[in-house]
Amino acid sequence: MIRLEPRAAPSQLLAWTSPLMAVALTAVFGALLFLFVGKDPLAGLSVFFYEPIKDLRGWSEVGVKVAPLLLISVGLALCFRANFFNIGAEGQLTVGAITAGWTILYFDDGSGSGGGAVFIAVALLAGMLGGAFWAAITAFLRDRYNANEILVSLMLVYVAQLLLSYLVHGILIDPDGFGFPQSRLFSDGFLLPIVLPGTRLHLGIVLALLAAVLGWIYLSKSFSGFRLQVGGMAPRAAQYAGFSARRALWVSMLISGALAGLAGAAEAMGPVGQLTPSISPGYGFAAIIVAFVGRLHPIGVIFSSFIMALFYIGGELSQSRLGTPAAITGVFQGILLFSLLACDVLIYNRIRWSK
Image 1 (spheres, rainbow, N blue to C red):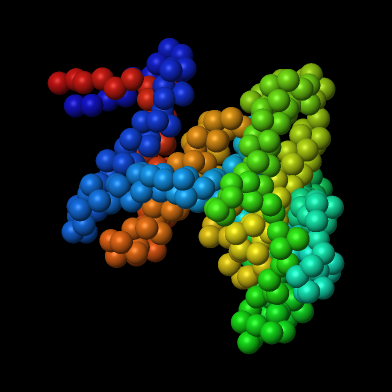
Image 2 (image 1 turned 45 degrees about the horizontal axis):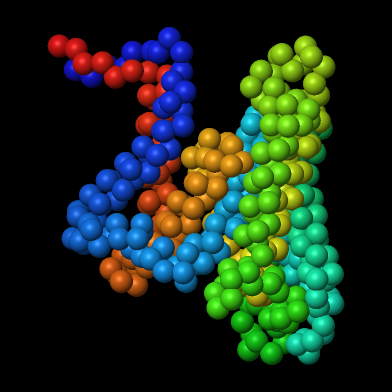
């Protein structure tokens, strides 16, 4: 029989290798899944782990997916470390896209001219403020009425999505769009610059990597980051030391919301180029998995964002090449999450065999 024996101390080695083991298990179970549905397992794994990165164009498309995932997961890592569970990043992304898009549509006369660095910066700032405002609703209700931030932030996702749908069906609809629920296409001067010529890789990837570095500096080098982490790991010790849980709530939620809003703005001003009802394929929810696979570390989430980006592109390729349903991406995300949870058990326990 197999039993689990508690370790005297958590294994630091397994704490960092567990995500790698989880990715390996995801590949194994993914191959079995393809086999059970009558598909070639090697071909299935190839479209997920090889095809997206076999050439420069593939790498650039991975970078397009990494940008929003990394921005959101850095903010969620800060929140989760402070022991506040922001599950509504998808809604904050949506509101960030709305405020950035509305700002662009206000200044963009549709002639194809105008724009520039200043207008792009203003739109990105508007996106961050929109995301921060949406997160502030959750922070206020938690701070003032002790409302559960998980439920509040999650329910606000649907409010944000309905708000976006209402706007693109109404006041922001493209008058020349034949009734389709979408805004006008943004002029080139209001779109994020391309960082790799001939591809869709835009400035968002630079902003995401910068956010990861700044997040690491904030957590590891600043006193405010230290207080935030102590409040999450040992609330009573933080209270004894005079650290404000209220301050940690507002700081972590506002940063998380601002980064999610920036991700939404970058999507609207990058690969999408307009406001549509489906501005995000679920980046805000996928980033929760990304944050935990990256061990809630701003640098670690770079690796996990890359893996999740492969799943998104691999899911699209498997639909077109292998005829799998659209849900395959979510299946791989779920396998990764459960594999990580299983591997994390070994951090605190040893496997023992007994008769």
